[in-house]
Amino acid sequence: MSRFKRGAHVDSRAGFRQEKEDCPVPSGLLKAARKSGQLNLSGRGLTEVPQSVWRLNIDTPQESQQNLSFGAADRWWEQADLTKLLLSSNKLQSLSEDVKLLPALLVLDVHDNQLSSLPDSIGDLEQLQKLVLSHNKLTELPLGLWRLTNLRCLHLQKNLIKNIPLDLGNLVNLDDLDLSNNHLMDIPESLANLKSLVKLNLSCNKLQSLPPAISEMKNLRLLDCTQNQIESIPPVLAQMESLEQLYLRHNKLRYLPELPCCKTLKDLFCGNNQIEVLEAEHLKHLSSLSFLELRDNKVKSLPEEITLLQGLERLDLTNNDISSLPCGLGALPKLKFLALEGNPLRAIRRDLLTKGTGELLKYLRSRIQEQPDGGLKGEPKTAMTLPSQAKINVHAIKTLKTLDYSEKHEGSIPDEVFDAIDDSPVSNVNFSKNQLTAVPPRIMELKDTLADINLGFNKLTTIPEDFSKLKQLLHIDLRNNLLISLPMELEGLTKLRSIILSFNRFKSFPDVLYRISSLETILISSNQVGGIDPVQMKTLNSLSTLDLSNNDIMQVPPELGNCTSLR
Image (cartoon, rainbow, N blue to C red; front, side, top):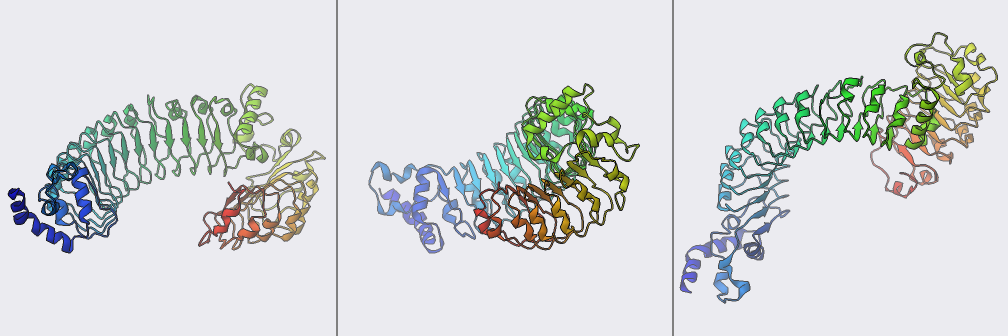
């Protein structure tokens, strides 16, 4: 027994005294860690790691002084090696070289500290499998790090790293690598050595391209390159035979990636790029896709080849320049979700769009049956792509009840446009993309039948009071004008279901909208609205969609949570 006492006297009592005086780590935690092999010191405000932590498995513990019983629970000399050390959410600026005194560590987590460097001796933790260094201030990594060949998970996101050396290729057992939110301009070719990698996150860096060599990562399932400066994707990426999810949002792509023989890709996210054309060539390789996201691009049309995507379940085309849809879209057997908000769709009535995907697909299917050539019934192919020879499509007035005089860039609507109606009941009017500074007065002639009016992309500064006479209106589109207010008389529009006021000059939420209880959708993004009245908003019992994005609202009133109809 004297052996233990002597060891305690020489070695550990000094260590214990130090622990008592400057160690903010309770001795009970250290005692428990010797039994469990795990120590959690997260969120304790530590500015440095106490020496007693690094020496946990070396020094004779304090309890050897007080308890020499041989009860099973107190055999401190049968301690377990520390395998898991959690030091996250402290104020550590550095780690001691003594980290090497814990050679059995499997997990080391120091995320959310203020580390600007790491000790080279970290490379001595040969057993380490998980190393979490995210949310620090690291600008470079020690050479020792690349000796950790047993690492399976390495998280380095949210640091200040500009360069990853070729040595990264040494970590051949990695299956999860996160390098997002750094300052990387390129990725080493040696990434190709990481044959076990399943998940790779490169988002929010400054990458302009991807090295073709990464196609050799045959087990990679998820590749996230969101928010970089990538202009094109190397076709060899298709050789990543396990790739299921590819995130390319917020880059500079002009085309969909061409991925021949990519049989496993399920989800492709290409939103917020500069894609204008969907090539049939690119679509035919994506037959395994179940989700294609193309929102916020400049796509002008969908080719019929979209029907090659037989597995497609979700298609997001929000905020593009699409004016017509191929009817074949209705024949996609698995399609359950189709988002088209923010497109200048002329060929389809807006009330159809608000009824949801099912109704829209049913409509497109009915058009396939009615017209063998697959074009929309009642619309000559040329009318969709070329300016109409005659200025007025009389056929559309008669069969579709639609008066379309859009994209003419004219300052007023000529009388012959209204004359062409000739007693036909018109329910849809599209005067968008002109130079109108006032609502055409003759629109009032349609007050008994007009349900849907599109005056978007003009130069309107006011809406006249007698607009309220259009009692049958269900949908009003006034986006991209110069409006600052709406007349209170509009509360007479008791059937109105949706109104679009995005990209105008409203400084306050139009009071009249609180009084139109039939409203289901209000889109008023990209104005200068400073606030809303949640109490009045709650009276709109049918309101399910409210878009106030990109305004001057400093805070969302919590009472908005009481508006239970909002989805």
